[in-house]
Length: 217
Length: 113
Image (cartoon, rainbow over all chains, first blue to last red; front, top):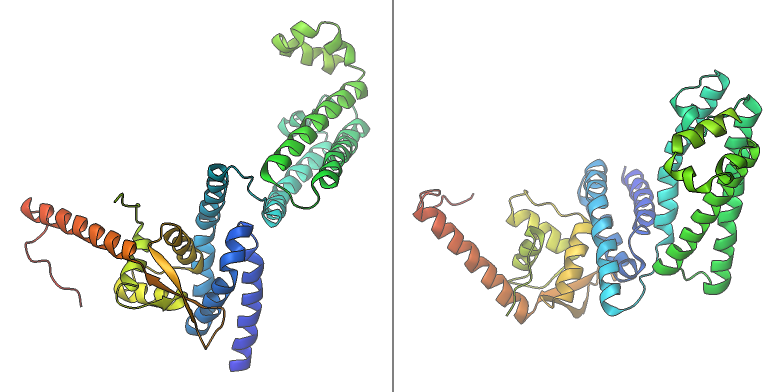
């Protein structure tokens, strides 16, 4: 029984060690061994479920508090806070299910020839299944490629020591580039560049007419 | 002396350290006991509070290492920490006296078991 309990404890401790990577690097470097020790002691004295409940329930608030505190302290010292790569990865992982559901919704919409809300969100001026498929696959691939380029440049310039300001700068560049390329590709795909180019001044102010023009292209 | 704002967790940690030095888990258990189980700190909350109190110099780390577990560090109250704790308790006492004068609390509060 005790060996079973120990196995569970060890597994829980390893999982907790992974979770600790979500904290800011400076906090983790200072307190990780102690926090692991406390967690192990809790597992010995209390039911595992209760320990996990307590740990998980306090996690979001503590993560936010520590990251805000890290950024505030860095600003006060005139230094750049280090970005927690694990938190970025966790953010992507947490967003992935939502993105997947959204994509499946779009796919379902495409298969059913449903010209409802989701298809409209996807840029649903597509007149054919192939066109929508291109929008769903080619444009994200282009956007991903455009995002990889600034990231590569970033790593080349700064190495793996990412900082808040440099990542923000790279991410903004990548986002703008991806948006611009996606827009141009979309317009080219629909042979609708003229709708924007013919009268650039009214494109933004007469959005409805511009969209109608693109739709009829 | 300008008093740093104390959270409930911080106040209880200061109280737990008021009569002897302790390591993290020991603090956690003492806080639970002192609050009759109403405050149960997790490791994240505990070390978040400890970090702030170290920064504010309310507590300090001792040289002592726990023989049972080398990862444990032992903390104790500083002079500043003791002063802040007294100030906070006096402030709370004043609030209780005010509440008693306004008959919001009985004059002699019943003792906890």
